[in-house]
Image (cartoon, rainbow, N blue to C red; front, top):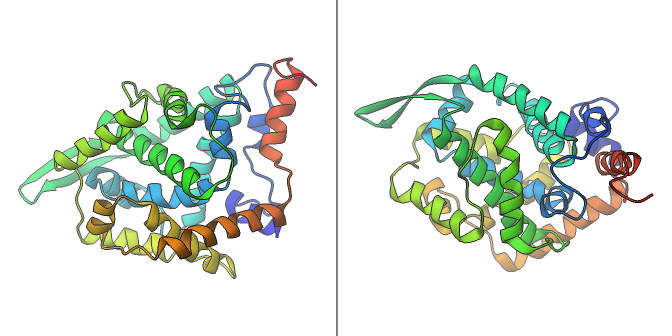
Length: 294
């Protein structure tokens, strides 16, 4: 079970994430320590639900959606695209400052190729670049709100300093991508999301529905597709009601989905075992350079 799960997420035949070396290397700390909120949240399994929720939120912005449709092989290689996202999240959370800078450079180079146009309204077309601040901000808050919400609903480790601390600390992650002026607490995060809604920047069309259908029914192997269906329902339940309405998704009963998802995530954790190659490598680096006690 452990090896199969890691193969699925890392896309490596041995289940060894190709970014493990980047996390282990270096003679300096990174953005976060094991006692920091982003480390705790991203090491927990609520991120499995949060990632799905974030994709659903991102699909609501026509610019983000167009970038995925025009420049991503998400249908031909959905797990490959997922692995790329996991790489950025993992290296940024657990890697050294040098590793974070290198990973940000990789993402920034990819972003220079993502350009095009999308329909703001039937009468208005807008050019876009992946590095546009409004698109970067929507991607950032979609991920941040999703990981936070799903950790609170489905994970079990308390967040050091609470939600506000997670939001403030994770804001450092996007500075190397050129994004500043992001929400620094829960109230500002909610206000920013509401602003995208009230300004009419979010909408749903046939392209949105096509992407959402793919997110709901990706081509996963074996038993993983049945586990994924539960995680998808958990992601839908965690969405704000107005987003569910826009996406045409209905939430299953909370009394059923929330405890079942918690049980399944705990079971996956138990079957995989307590070890985490990524965390262990990051901690070993921090101990080697004297940031943590041996």
